[in-house]
Image 1: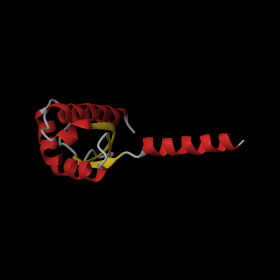
Image 2: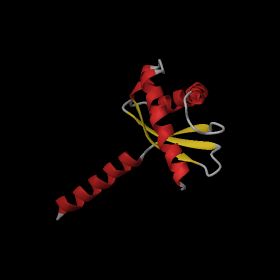
Image 3: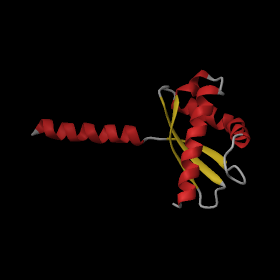
Image 4: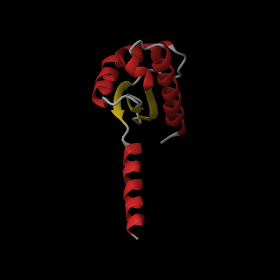
Length: 113
């Protein structure tokens, strides 16, 4: 990943987090944490990984994908140094759950010993 792509990814992560906290009226989306943004090399698509405190992850994912046009329009209005704003795709980040599962397996192995 180039330095420019990394810088833009970090900037998008910060701006999308700010938009979700301040601009979105849906209460379910205010408890969403953006964990990572991956941009394609041509900067045309962005995968936005998120986690939420809400138990209904599918509903939150659906709501985020419904709001992506609004979020994208707000990003265009902000001072982000990019020629065209990438298409947004929200993906639930399962890395924390996976890490917890691995920790539980390791704990169970140590308890048996």
